[in-house]
Image (cartoon, rainbow over all chains, first blue to last red; front, side, top):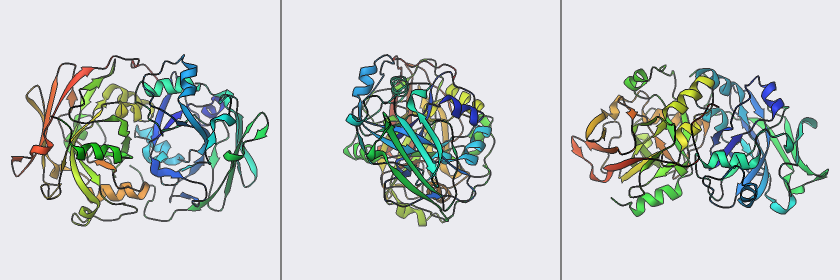
Length: 222
Length: 237
């Protein structure tokens, strides 16, 4: 199950005119939204204003339940590996959901709305709170920030999630996006990557094209 | 009541649980909700599934926990971009049926609705999806003509026919599959009728399914309710 933590970096909160949360909250993306490298483009559904959001992802290596938020070592031990992910979001669908108090599942859950990189071995990232993630559109940098800007750090995220729902081996946790989110349309190419101490993490490199989905969905009022 | 191998397999093979909201008119009214122009839906994590014999539903601290009885479908083959209103056409996609209770943290959900936050926590706590069955397609020939009931401590709280669904199953599967591909093993919950309400520690929910007035034995469910304890306590987001 792909689980997602909306651990918003402070400037990302501001750019979307959101309220800064007192505690973490999170939402689910279905595993059917995962797009593997080489599996084709991200598909923009009709009438959707589609945004990118680059995020550091954790692949869980074991069952986690009721983790103590101060158990930093326990949190790190529970991580099997990392990946880079783009939390594609139907922004207008999400805006309607927020306005009407509806779930976010459609806005976040379309097929292809979770492109991920190859698996990044744990040994490549000594400190997940000190990693630079970036995303460009057509060669122009849009997002570029360090994960040290997270408002709620990983042990707190895993603690808050696991006191609600048990995290299981193989679950994916996305740890939030920094400022700079924006729309992409058909023909755009997103590239993304990760740097540790200024050096590229090869496994994290991503290149994803954007195309219109076609098909039967068309955004309409709920 | 122990879990069958079939139900255990259903849980293992389940990659998502997708649930339609506000799909019975009097349920929409009882919660003072707006009737939607089109179906909407939300996800429950498979980690919330509770099989018979696995213990009680656990109420987290500070949560006003509601029951919602629902007919569930187990998907038997991939559904993608389906576009049909034909009741017979969708039977090929259904492997079997489940009875399920969509347990909901109502106050957490109310806060989410007020603040435009996701529903995932309100719907996603461990044990918040007790299920029973499976019921075969031979036994349950028409999913739009089944009576669901739920009692708390012997008192009937919900009891209605699935013919009251506002959006029928072909429409549900079509609308879901235009957004996200439904995969073999996925579970779809088809909405709850009127009569939802609170349960507390020490209470017992009993529910079931009737076809032509006759109880379907394999769907009968009995679930106790206990306080969860643990570290979660409802607080403002």
